[in-house]
Image (cartoon, rainbow, N blue to C red; front, side, top):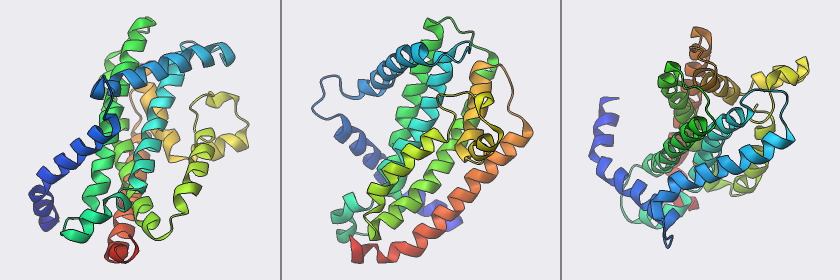
Length: 258
């Protein structure tokens, strides 16, 4: 572990450059540039709240905020994992030339998504203030579910990036998986409307626990329960452990497949 930390610190400047490069590439030739990291989620949230608030009210108070919180959590997971899939493939020329810890390419993609997550969070606060939704002190604890989400997404991103190098079809199949996962995550609908059998399936989704924690602190002035935190930590730790195991087991073969 000490050697890993030392190695990470040694290449930290490179990681910063990779993150900067990813953001610049994403917003190059854009008039507003990185300002879109705030404007894009804000605009998307406003559109979604207007559309879905009129279509699916479910008799729920502050439904726009309920919807926006779901979008914030799920969009980060989707963006972080999807971008991580191509992290190794897109940096093939660099990997072939010099030695760089390959996991840095995945970490840089996740960090880039974290920047967008922070912008989306700021946009959500703006929407809550605009809609006159009360901000409770529990908002300060939003970092707990967000941190668990980041760790879980990093683990998933490591697995996907490693497998995609050898099996490129994963990139196409994963888009279908993400769509199915969205419907198995209570982004749009409230849990109390689901039949018991379906609710059990949705509760097995790791994102559901994280999303419920996030909504509790943002909307309902409710502290995360010890049980939900323990479950969230276990899910994130297991996913990260699997990701590291798969990535390090397959990384020596990357050079043969990229």
